[in-house]
Length: 456
Image 1 (tube, one colour):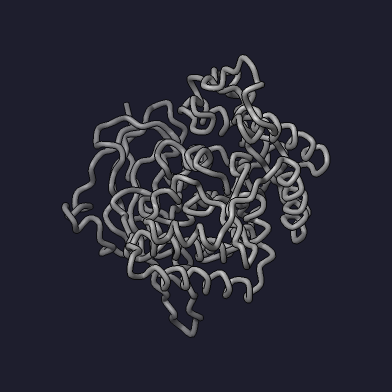
Image 2 (cartoon, rainbow, N blue to C red; image 1 turned 45 degrees about the vertical axis):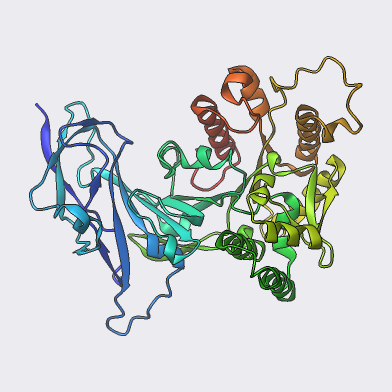
């Protein structure tokens, strides 16, 4: 016979902070069976500085305004409703309830064969948040929703928040779905962690994090930042009569990303210990698909604007004409990319020699490039054929791994094993099976390299 146990809220913040929450929005229906590791539900939360008894107020990072807490099952069983826990409708989205430890938010019919640790919560607490592009883009109808330029999640479990390891993803569109998982909130990666860990993903919107971009972000001075900002302001001013809001948004987000160094950012994390600081990242995951054979360089200031061409083509004519007038397309060879990687590696490990760098390589077998003769293509072939470029970049990565100790996530081999035409038909975007395989490879590398939070 199943044991019925109350699902009680756990302590999630220190004494100098108060937490208010919305109602729990359940991902599992009442009466529906769940397994250990399943996401049960989540709520929106608001942090309030207590500042009582002379305690110092904390300055909260902007992304904590979008903080959410998810409940991840430690046992298997079935949820049962507890009375008085939901007001229904829009009221359930409002942070009207104080977070009080031991509050019963549901009951659980625990499976008879489930292992329950006496005195331990029936769930793990997972924190999810994002740094909004603008406060006008807020959307917390789901877990981890909203337009953000940095999304992160963490669990401290029963460990100390001070020991939290951080893994940062700086890839293009292939990587976020691997890190964030099927539900978009990092459950699969966090479930595999062995200790306190935080995962951070920065999407390629609109800037691609190529090696050259990362170098620029690390090395730029305040004078450089001011010059970039002034240049984009001039672009809007010159084209104001003909540009539209999408152009303004593109310019503003370019400035924000070009003038930010994500590799050296720190992060506020909440735990039962209180408010702590984690980072900079112990490990960074990159993608060789971020490297293109040509890229935009500003004619006067010399900075590169690595951006997907489809984003540029979707801009209005005024902004496209400004880019054409003030930027030039520069051919970028594999040797130049190798030079950038060498320089980038030195910068990334300058502050932390033990920082681990993982790079997803490229799928080199493309069904649309069934070439019988290369005579019709101009040299160099890597600028003409995606498959040839992929092989050149993969070879370069192999050499870099021997020279610098980076870890290669061998997506090329995984695609070949699973069938590239099925799992990665366009050479970049994978299906679920391949994403799972790459995720497992990343986890194995993090464990082998003793990255905090993933050490065996």
